[in-house]
Image 1 (tube, rainbow, N blue to C red):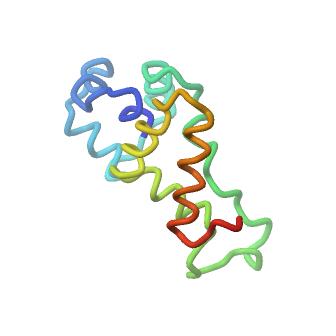
Image 2: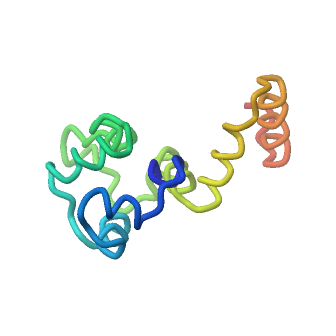
Length: 120
């Protein structure tokens, strides 16, 4: 998500890491695991702290009884799924380019009204 938000291609990130864009694709899809040292390199290139990659992870349950098993999951997981989608990234990029706070507020109000959640 960070790579796309700053407008960096998979090829460009791969070049800076000494990898092919196909290897970057595999990291992003979760096909290949990312080592700690590689994660650190990525954070440096993308201009974020390593913690950035973990900020939105749900906390682990304190005990097995606290786990939700096969349940739908939390609303945060659904939101992160959307934010990681192509539409979510495009929407966030366009929204962040709106400089006027009042316009951003009105846009949020419009989206809430369209979703039927305008009372929240």
